[in-house]
Length: 550
Image 1 (tube, rainbow, N blue to C red):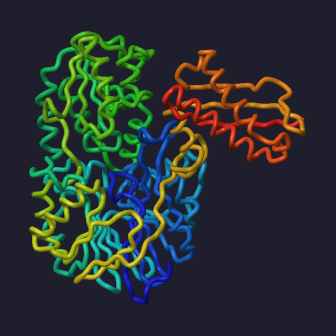
Image 2: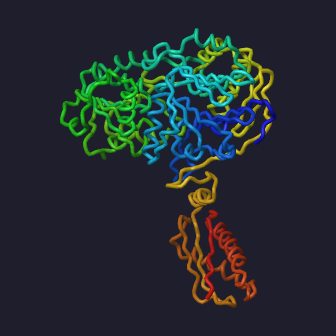
Image 3: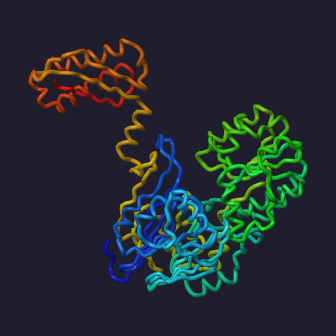
C-alpha cells in the first residue's frame, strides 16, 4: 500500500471486534511499525485446531518498509504468535526485560535462535525507529511490565494503551503516576488507541494489594488440602499465593510447566524475590493435608492441565478428598463456561469445596472499568479515540464513553481498516486484507481454508466416499464400494441401497462413453448420492466419488 504523502495511519490486523489476536500497524510514508503479535484459542468452528492467529500477509507485503515489532507486554493475546509469525517478518523485536524473557523462552521452545534480532529495552526506555519515537509508559496489568506506548510522529503524538488498569498497589512493578501521565497529556495527544475490554463496567477494577489482603483472610481458615489455580503470567498473584503459603504455614507445591517457567523467569528478571521454596509434588501426598498448598495450572478447565487431572483422579502423585478446597483465583474467560462447568461438577461430586471470583474476592481484572478510563483520559486529554481490544459491543461502549468525556472524534474500527489519524477527524482511507490463520497440527493454514471447512462440514454432516471401477466404455466392472462415516444410520444396509439406486439411476442417463470425462461423471454422481442421502437422512454429508478406469 502506498500512503498519501505525510499521512499517519493506524491499521489493526487483529484485536478489533474480538478479544485476542492483537496485531496493529502504524505507518508514515515508507516506514511502518507493528505493535503486538498475539494469538487466540480455537472455537467450536475450528475442529482439531490448536491456535488462531491474525494473518500478517499485509505486513509481510510491506517488505523493508516494515521496521520493527514492538511488544507492549507478554500475554499470549499480545505476544503468543511471535514464534509462529515474527521470524518471517525480518524485523527486530523490541520488548522490556520480563516480556523479552518470555519471548526468548518461546523461541527456544520452537528451536529458533534469533538473539541478534531481539532488542531488550529497560523499563521506561524510549527508542527511535524511523520516524517513530516510542516511549514505554508503565501501566498496571495482570502481568509484569504492562506498558502503554507514547508514540511521537511527524503528524502528532499517539498513545497506544496496550492492556492496562490503574492500581495504587500493584504488588509487582510501579503504580502509574498521575503526574507523569499528565505531563504526557501536556505534550499533546492527537489520538489514543485504547483497551475496551471493561468499557461497560461501571466499577473500577480492584487492586492486587486488596486481593492479597482478602486471600490471606479467606485462606487462613481453610481446612484440609488447599489448591489454588490462576493465570501463570500473573506474577503479582503468584507472589500473593506464595505469601498465603507462608502465612498459613503450608508447604508450597507448584504444578504445571507454564507456572514453573514463569516463576523462574520472574525471579531471573528481579521479581518474586520473597517467593517461598517449593516442594516436589511426589513428597506432598505424604504430608498432613492441612500443611499443603498446591499452586497449579488449569484455571480455565484445560483438559491436559494439572488441575483437571487431579479433579478426575488421574494424577499419579496428588489426590483430593472430601473437605479439601480448590480456589479459582481467575476470571472465567467467555467461551470456557462449559469446560469449567464440567470441572466444577467433577470436584463437587467428590465433595471438594470450590471458591471462584463469584464466591469471594480472590481475583481482580487487569483491565480498566469506566471510572479508570475517565481518570486516564482526564490526565492524557486525547483529541481522538480509536477503541480496540474488545468485541463490538465493548468498543461501541468505549466510544460512547469518550463522547460523554468530550472526545467527539472517534472511530470504531474493523480489522483491516486503514485509518488516517488526525486530531480533527479520523478517516478510513483504505482496507488491508485481514484474514485469520490456524495452527492445524504442525501446519499454519487459512482458518477458512479447504481442510478446515471440510472438517467443519464433516463434523456436522458426516462423509460419504464412493469408489467405482469402470472400463473405457463406461461399464461397471464391480459393485460400487460405498463408505459412510458419521452419517445417521450408516450401519443400515438400506442406506447403502439408497446410494446404489442413485448411482444406477445416474449411470443409466449417461452416454456409455462419458467415462472419458471422468471428472464430469464423478461430479454428477456426487450430486446424486448427496441428494439421495439428504432426502433419506436429513443430513448433507461431504461426498466424494472416485472413478477408476481399467
